[in-house]
Length: 394
Ligand code: AMP
View 1 (cartoon, rainbow, N blue to C red):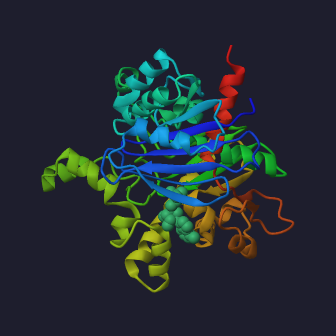
View 2: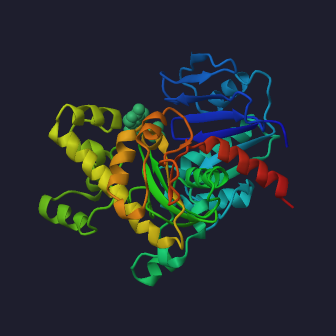
């Protein structure tokens, strides 16, 4: 299948899109329709010459925004649509051609991702209105982690909570972890083997991948578990909820909101959720920014060290995401906390590998576990999985 794939990531008031050719050198048409349903709705994007545009779409809904996106495709009509779907529960271990039964399964899983799956379903319906003749494929954030063994995905809770209510670790950022670990295997002299991946952006997660199969990951039932993130707390004592409720009278909604929106780098620093600003403030001696940086990096190192237990052999670590790809400070700090793992960082390579560059950061001649920066490509991976799903369907 050589024609382009349209990759769609639908939120409740936004649609991110990318038109991706099978030739990786071909320019991508990409952008975002945002604030849908309001008078401020607009489409922002990039054309094939790389020029940026903003088009107001007052009052537009998802279907109207998709019709405008179609007009912006410069006559390059897609052969299929690939949808990013946040939660596939245990139903989906790989991408699926969308039909009524797939829609019903995504609906069933909505209880596990109440903010995301309904918006994803609305996006599929709108896309079917605008592209009724195109095959549509669902690509799940959770699917890559379905290879985890029970020891990694089960919580130590009563069995019926798993069996009847699906309470278990699912993990997220699956397309990113899948892409960077496969790419590391292709680029590295050590090949496909045991890789630890750290996806560090606004959301952050780690994974342990053996032979291109996820063995464990830091996010859990929801994307709140694990590392410190921009505004998310990551791991806390599970007794915290009861304590805040009993001692401070906080409601569940308030606790949920504080842990998801007011914690993480923002909560610790009291300043910002943006790592660039944390780095600047820390550099200027701001104590809470320094603390936020220390907790952030320590928790990444601790998570990577823990996940190494899931691998029979360690071939290397991969940094990706906005912070992982752009912050030599975070990379150096994390690795300095793992001296017994045998990573040897070349400082010049670390400083030079930023802004979308792919690279190996080890000192020359080092033959221990390697350190890689691999810019993630979630849209490219979704397009690839969409093609694969259509080419292999029976
Ligand atoms: P993402 O969600 O992957 O877009 O990543 C967003 C995060 O990457 C934010 O915390 C940004 O501050 C961070 N980031 C982007 N560029 C840099 C940079 N040059 N140095 C440090 N952090 C950066």
